[in-house]
Amino acid sequence: MKTNKQIILFLTFMLLIILSLTIYHTVKANQEESLLFVYLDPGHGGFDGGATSIDKSMCEKDINLKVCFYLKNYLEKTNIVVKMTRNKDVALSKSKKEDIHKRVELINKSNCDIYLTIHANAYPSSSVRGFQTFYSSNKQQNEYLAKTIQTSLQMLDKENKRLSKVITGKYVLDNTTKIGCLVEIGFLTNEIDLQKLTDDTYLEKMAFQIYLGILNYIEESRQI
Image (cartoon, rainbow, N blue to C red; front, side, top):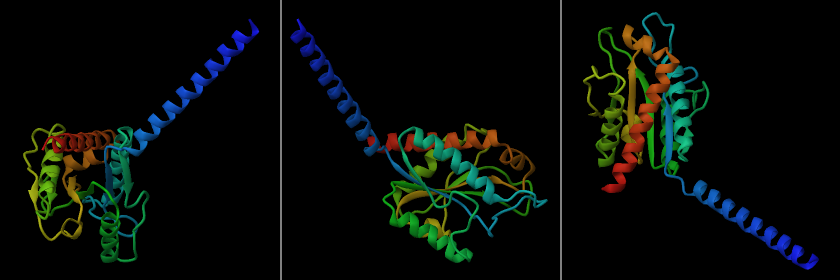
């Protein structure tokens, strides 16, 4: 009788070991086989505040970073690897030129699948408003990524009729070798946009729509 109990205990112990090893390897495999690696570039930082509101009370650099943190959180919950060119209010170099060169270098040296550079806009006319994505024509996938994110962002403001647009003369877009696009999240010089961009709830919603755009891009890319 004692022998039977020992056998049962031994078999139970072995079963627990097997189950533990199975769970461990499953979790490890899921971690290693990430869906995607996304590089986020919160524009500006440190001495370079970027665009400012008309009264100079709000700097672009702070808003860009907030959106990227919200977006990073959503992406990582989907087992997507995320890196950021900066994760606090710092510049990557002592000059604007070196800073932007460093951002491109970081993205190009990585093995990221896509990158997004996040910025806010400014314009002499305070009536100009709205978010918009831009892309370089150096990769066909850039256009598709930008359009997918733009379509997703439209859910935030259906009155925004802006479309994703090809652009030249932007150093990051022109010189990165990875698939990616620029997301301009609104105009700090417009009263309506400024009110939204200073609302953390809105910024999180914007990050969520960008996140959905990325997921849609991934799904559609797999079917091509």
